[in-house]
Amino acid sequence: MTTDRPTIERPTIELTGVTKEYPAALRRTQARTALDRIDLTVGEGVTGLLGPNGAGKTTLLRIVGTALAPTSGSVRVGGLDPADPEERHRIRQRLGYQPQEPGFYPSFTAFDFVDYVAVLKEIGDRSARRDEVRRVLQKVGLSDRMHTKIRKLSGGMRQRVALAQALLGRPSVLLLDEPTSGLDPEQRLRFRQLASEAADGGTVLLSTHLTEDVTALCPRVVVMHEGAIRFDGSPDALAQQAAGRVWESAAPDPAAAVSWSTGAGRSRNLGDPPDGADLVEPSVDDAYLLLVGAGTPAVDQAA
Image (cartoon, rainbow, N blue to C red; front, side):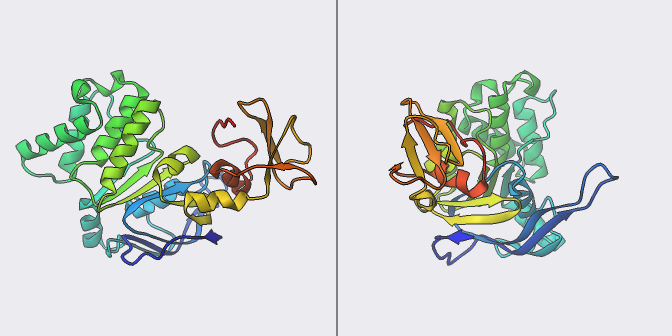
């Protein structure tokens, strides 16, 4: 694993030797290891978990979010142990979690759903709770749709409802699993603002497979692949992992491991460059592709 991360004096999240194994289920699936001896500490600010589908990101978030227990290893959130029922309850009181696939009730309105989650989170009396529900729905730009049934909302709006419930109670730890899925460019900008606000004095752990999310928002990025951490450091340091391995040419280079056409009509190539190759400055996308061995770019890229 490559690491360039700063020292964390007061970690909010601590994982030590965390492994999660899923046994074979009635012969329908093979046994697999979703996380393999993960060591990770996360402090205040925004940390991005970057990796392809199946890398183990969601499993890691579910373990931190107390929804799943590790097979082995230790977990601490705010110094508390989720394996202890009383401490697990205290963790959940200060935690906000936006899952990748929220369990919506389609016949609920956006307000009713977020209010239901607020009840589960034991937020205040009825008046205070409903004020908080209105606050978070306004935060995500759904004031005018809060009384619309969820089944009538677009995918992007549903994603914002999921974010709203995660923001209830101004959590000190915010876990976001693929939070920008279904959001348009304007909504993505608004999401980045909200995540930055939440990270001011708090901890945000964001899972994504989109390099643009971590480049725009995260001072620290942790690349995961096949249940292991492959890189831990800044986006700039991640990009430099591909230094000397990115070049451009008039046509796809057969020597490249990965090659694609850019918006300028040239080909961008990754791999071991031939002699005389026109080397160019690497990007986070380039380094990510080389780390995870993907066959196509993580996002569309133009020169």
